[in-house]
Length: 71
Image (cartoon, rainbow, N blue to C red):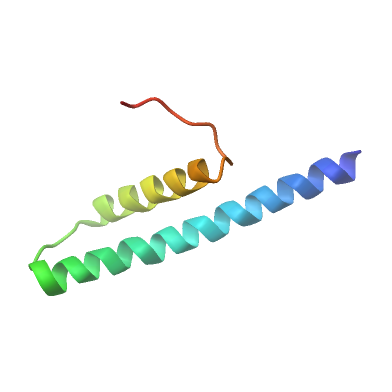
């Protein structure tokens, strides 16, 4: 029983890290496009916020984290 729980936990952690890495790349890509095409700048704090938001939304869409009611 313990191995099953540990295995599922490992899969969730692995998925979460993959999503976080993709969210980081996506946020940087969006920031670079904004700089290149719209001449906008983004702070490091905003970039980190964007990574966290994208990660949460993507994990929520895959039903890996409980949803929230921010609306």
